Figure 1 (cartoon, rainbow, N blue to C red):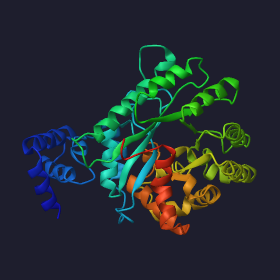
Figure 2: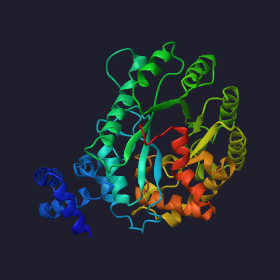
Figure 3: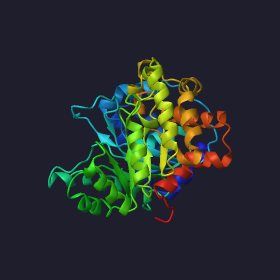
Figure 4: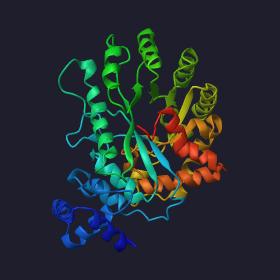
Length: 394
């Protein structure tokens, strides 16, 4: 079947260009067997979920260590391979000259890297939502407008995936959540510029809930935009989520997306009984606000303390489910599948778990929770479609 698919693909495309691109990629990778690698790349390009976008990928030297580690993962059968998935939260960055805050093993993660992870996973990821990460900002112009560069870059990625060149590729950056200083007096003009990008859907805002912040929040609500909120201390500071709940009640027309289960959760929090009880109570309270939805993921990243990145080989989906089930169960039971969405949080979580393994774990989680087919359709794609207004027509 692979040979037949390749032949059909080559018949429909410019063979010379495909082979030339494959040879260049193999040489760039310094592969010990270029002939074998060219064949692999041609097979990869023939995948209905990949296309030439993936074939053009070459592994940056700065990513070599994490790539080699990920390659040692046990290959698992793909569960429910036809289930449509929208990855509701990922980043794209180039940190080969890392910023002072940067500590991740995946130094470069562009659209080709994401497309490769999706295609090689075997899961039916039909689209993605990009969330700001401080990358691709403009270097010129007023400071408040510089984050517009990140949104504009992602719009370019989205346009590429929507073009006739890549008709079978997943819609990367189908939705884009940028960053803007919600306190800035010029916030309306910043949002207006970002809104020129048709994939722009909202802002991930940070900081205290003061009057200036709320003025920016009101500007989001007036435009029908979404507020994503990452509470880095949301699990350890029991006052954080109640503040967000109060904001949700003050702006009932605003959709608020709680990132990463509300904070850095995991073993460190589990060792503090009072903090764990507060997190559970706060999740339940926040779920009482109908305009708040929850992203379920990022429990696997280094900061969560599972230590997955320290293993000789990557964790499997069964063990990962056992390590994380109680956290996910509480949030999903509280919010309900129609107000939850799974997220990869790649490439942050890529340092700790392969894409295919992570999606298999989410599917096992859904089955263990006894979710119906309709509920699975929501948590894997439907919620993200509604919240970020992802339309096949746009």
